[in-house]
Image 1 (tube, one colour):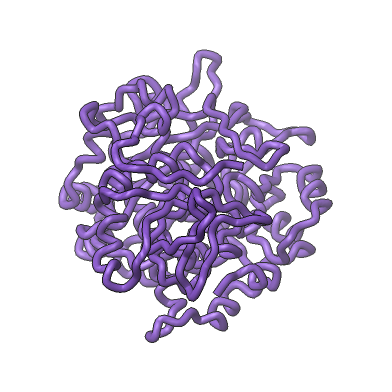
Image 2: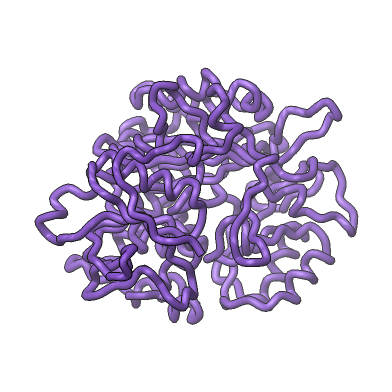
Length: 478
């Protein structure tokens, strides 16, 4: 297990917080141009390509100042239809997104990259006036991705000009170094003494609601409600998107998502898979990092899924986006992957795009982006022995036998001069990905706000009506 560290200002070492291939890469000019594109030009371009979109409403969405979901990273698929209508589809939006270690520096003179951008424009403003309410230090708590979590800790120490405690906080840790007293986070320092924390940057991803309470006097970014409202809860996220889409419909805007059936019990799963033509994606709503996602394209894969024992009672079933010959049948017709530009073997691979954004005083702005490709190429026809996850699964994370996490960086696609061209996307696709990311983030933030009363109390009864899964409800720290 990692030890607690007290990080002082001026300890940042760039090589510790980027993959070597990213640190030594040169950012693609189009990515740099996109990240520096003014909002009014983005809105003008998007409305030009989508004449039914209300520009004023789009500006309102992009100007949204998040209350709970301040930092997110959406996973998007570049898809098309039989009629060649291309679009970016949101698979999920994560409340503790990775991506900094995979992003080439925009400016070689800014060695802290978008780590610093995130801290300066989102974390620091989030703490305004906090010292008057609660005394204590600063901390970064994590259970995954130490490369980025430690990077944030070192940058926060520099920006805030004070020590930052870097603290592991694992699920089922028999001797946790983080506790809460009277809704205030306390961390066990290097001397073994528990001290109060006024604000914490969180990279706790595995069932975070069973260790971090909903009501906390310590400011936590992101607060745990962002996870429950959709940032780590695909069930409530699907409902948040549906509700927000009803509001957006009048303005020509829409969150593009696969067709989604929620509140599905395990014995009902085969019925919905059959309805979608035998091809579907089944998800454990509260898992992440590629865990708990099952792509189904054959009877054998469905049978294997049905044999698995799960901790939770409810699932979501989504339409599967595959090849034009084997995608789910939905009301909107079949969608299939655009995929990468064919390689020298004439192979096309499924790839997704991660778009990381954060809420600022001037709206929600992009931070960084990267892509990931699947292990095996996209094939025209499947057989009874096809392993669909190797063709469709893009997540780089994998869990080792000792419970630690690793990453398959061979499938990482950088936004640099070499890799970016393989994705086959352009500036308009990046703008579409950014807008879809913001729309999904705002939907989840609005849902999070709905879950609190005017007096700031969490509406557990309302949450239960949205997500009546006893196993999940038992885990939540109020």
